[in-house]
Image 1: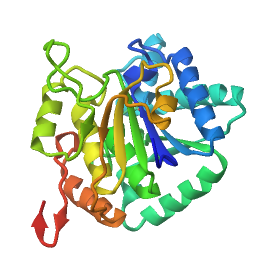
Image 2: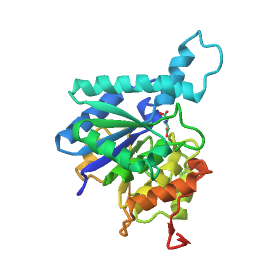
Image 3: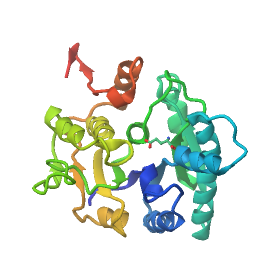
Image 4: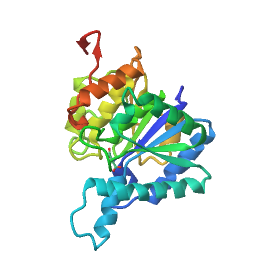
Length: 292
Ligand code: GLU
């Protein structure tokens, strides 16, 4: 695909564990090999990796001495270490350096976003940043809540051109393909409106980790910032390389032609989500006093 230079790749927990309780090193290695290939082609890549809470849960639950029931923060704290250790080992096999970036909503605020952007600019020159939400210290107020939206915020901040959301579905369907044999994959979405959200809601209950709704939210943020989003199946062996080479896989959400300024997107995001969980959040932007 033309114009892919700076890509944010997001992988969810169920993809990284391949539906089990533990991280799948085999799957992760496949991803690392593709990322290494793309990096060697000169692309700038950011990996948004979930899996901390799932990994921590697995580790703590299997530790018999645990008395009380651990919090998500505890799971995240323990799991993030293991998650990064695993990425580090796998990327090291291909002589690639990675670094951890843990973020909360605050890091995208007006007062901090320049610093966050500068950090990414610096890191991208040397390493592959691996991003997750800082679930251990995020509060209700500062939580983003899901890594699809986090990926969109990062992409917007660093002015990426593409977001690839890898998931356990092939893309967005006209109906839930598990229940409806006539469901068709939608290859391109030109504009995200309520009908698109309605399709996502219909298929979000038990498919994928963050579900389809948060992916559409992310695509909408991205689209308004002039960034394209692709939702694609993590099960295709060379999905990242194929996408960069222009193969039509999954669902492509086109960027809006009237590119909005990053700052406006971030401001709108901060304002709208201040008192609201992102999972319930229907993203919209205030423009010229009117809400789109
Ligand atoms: N940050 C969470 C984790 O690492 C994942 C959130 C998500 O799946 O969207 O476990």
